[in-house]
Length: 141
Length: 182
Image 1 (cartoon, helix red, strand yellow):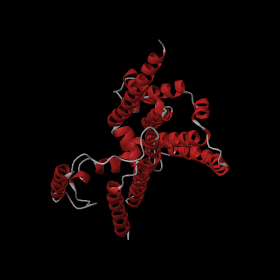
Image 2 (cartoon, rainbow over the protein chains, first blue to last red):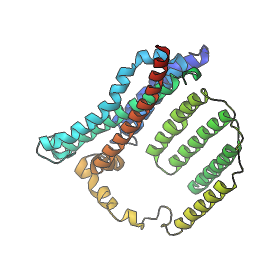
Image 3 (cartoon, rainbow over the protein chains, first blue to last red):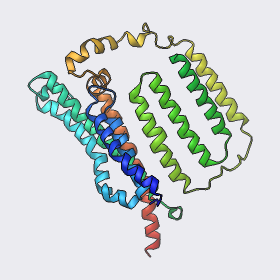
Image 4 (cartoon, rainbow over the protein chains, first blue to last red):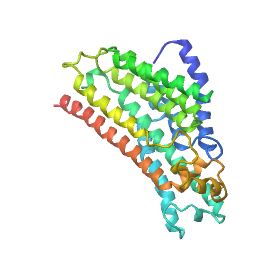
């Protein structure tokens, strides 16, 4: 944890906006540039920033290891779930047209959920890798 | 104007790589590679690929730099002198690079609308994408809907990489714990 007041204040000011930007990139991806991968990475970057300034232990309190590890798998499972929903509703694998009564609305729904899945997995992997790297000291070898 | 900006950025990137290769201080190397990624991200913005620029800035310049700094924390900060002269690897790399440059002569000109890649399925995506998916951003429509299988594969790759790193770095910690236990 850094004792530098400037860094701590700047981090506290910036992190909410980074998180908001990640959400914007995620949910506005249908209309502007962005999508699940970018949003997940920006989210992870915000958490890494938090961990650098306020310490790894505090970051682990915000997003515990167990939750991060769950995220790694949950995103892929969500994506696969959307894919499997196609055959269950009488379509093909990853067929979004059957997800709603109106085919275009179905496409919208499918894209929304798979982008969310991508974001969850990417954010989880990035954070987990950071936790693993930062949690090792030179004496751990 | 755009060409000028991109060329300046590419020149700066080249400079960064040359300095990177010659620097022995690993901290400077990490900072330079972050700088390289930022230049790359800016070049991507100039080329109108904002999605890629965002990813490059966040992953290449942000998280990678932090991970490399974390790795630097675990080792010495000066690169050891190479044991032998790098002439053979240099020759192999240079000839491979020249071969690749030779290969680019056959590629269509940059952003040529008549290039085969723009004639295959792209016109259909552009014409029917907004109507079929209701998503105005064609990149998202292609990525998530038309190419949903590919994106599923990419997500699985990210998952596999994460699982691999977890398996690798965790086992190591457990063995040290085992060593201390008895």
